[in-house]
Length: 341
Image (cartoon, rainbow, N blue to C red; front, side, top):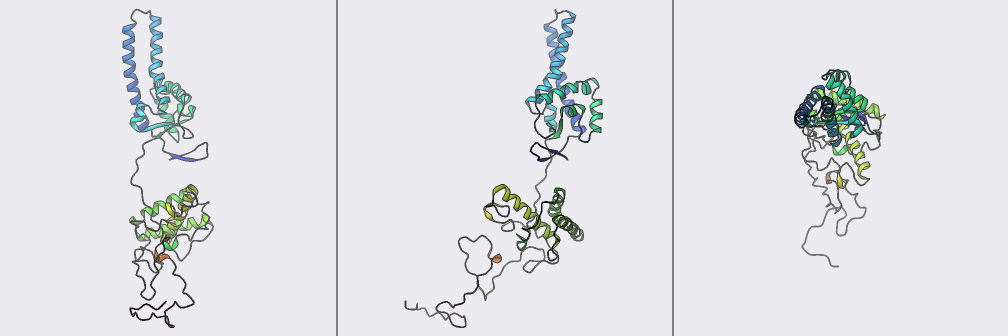
């Protein structure tokens, strides 16, 4: 990819068009332009057969410039960089900062294209595209433009598994500003594909990525947390911060309504099956089914409960016994009669 920086200092990742796709787009444009040029020339010759040679030559030059130069410039200007050939190949001409081109960009590209494409049969354009790191021809360099791929094949969006609930919010004070984007991308790719890796290879890769992330944050990676779970928790924390910046403080955990990503996510894979997982997690790393202890029944959740009961602290026992209870804490046997008021 090619990283472009807009006027607002926003980095854009665009895919420059390769020489084969650009050549195919130019061939389509030239075939259509020459077909139109031949039809227009035959019509003009038949209508102006009485003109002298000088007038016929001037009319031929004007027709050439209008059809083969003027029309492509007008098409690129009106379509914001998409000619017929580029539309068929999924390409578009943009400025160096990623914005749409204007008339002056299309004019410079068309004027230089007469020399490097029409007069040299595309040899100069091919050489310039092969030499340029972003595949630009001379017209693109002079006009300050770039031909990019508009239709990029994308597969199904990969799901990044959320961290275990006991890690949500643990790294809220961690400084993540120094972690580069390339490392974030590597971490996300690992988290989405770690189920396809060999266990030993996956653990080694997770350990290296966790060490790199910890080196950029300035805090050592926790020894009681598996590296894969640490990476998932750090990615979750970064997504939560981005959601809070984008939607305000009312968005917690990257999901609307304040519910963290670790809760209520269907199909959460048990991807953290590594040694060191705390009690309550099965061998695959997924939470084990919860069974409430018989000796300590949980109180019914209130109307504003937002987290599962298994992750909520139980209320502290009261110092004074409840009315009607015995001194040893056991409940009196039921008699079927209510005590007098």
